[in-house]
Length: 437
Image (cartoon, rainbow, N blue to C red; front, side, top):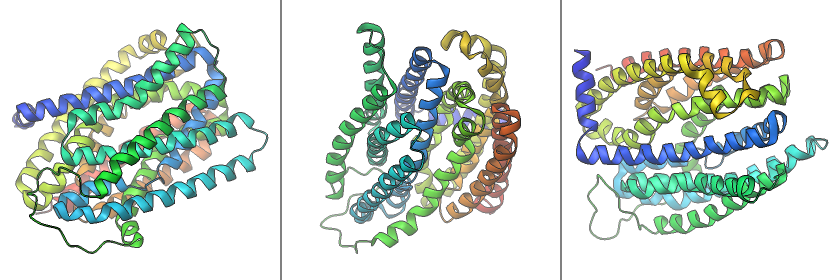
């Protein structure tokens, strides 16, 4: 029976159109994340564990702020256009104003942090430069939602990996062709300039979308002008806050470990841990693309208009995630030492232990994507946020108590434990809330 579910799910994905779309998305994500992976390898080898730890903690800090930039608006667009169809255009302009207001708050917050730690000049400079990277990052995410709604997967593929590829090419040229020894300031400046370029490019596309120039798929375009009330910023905030907090809580129990390790245990261990986490992030591309980029827009439509298709895909997806996640776990347990030594070198031997611990969370994380995706639909998002918030608080508590004693090992075990708990919470509520009937 389970094999039949898996085969049916794979058959659905293997349809010509779906196969091409998924293939493009995976290629784009592999290239994009792979280029980030290569950037980290280059930086880790060229600047050393301590400097790489400073870079890693600054990047993790700015990525925390990125969660407030837009505060879930890309996901809100997928939901609102999925349920309202072409009427969703009315949300675009106020949403962009909302995003701009969050960016102003972030800039003030980053500047405040730099004033509170005046002795840490390197980190402060990186944080200010990374703000421009953050603007580009948010712009890319917003345009990506537009392209998902249009199902323009070829452009979406290129759009998502282009910023990372650009940075990779620049770093490769500087380190290996021009033979420049880049400082932390140089590295931050490269991130800032690339971010500024994609910010300007994103603004052009988003302005077109706000004027209704979008080719929305899955909904028949109405004739004439759609007359609907334009939502206020408060209404946008009400729609966005569950998605915004979901992103924050996800980051806390997944990525904030690097920041806490840096301040509670030192930059060296933060660098070692980030190597293991980078490999884990590359693996998580598989369920992320399948659910967040491909199935979520469809889940929003199916949950309202085709519940049988929604439930059928969900059941089949669970089995495929369990099977694939377990297979990857086994591979990492056997080959983690070879992967780290080959890619990062002997200086990062401590990362092997962290990677083996984190690897055990992969099957649970894969299943969390499948179960959790159903909680994004309908009125279940607030429940999902509560579950994520509970696990995030647990993660912080464990890290604060144990990282000063056991270092990065404690962070790895904390991540494993929290992923297991979150998966079971998602499973219970998906079964008893979303599909109770």
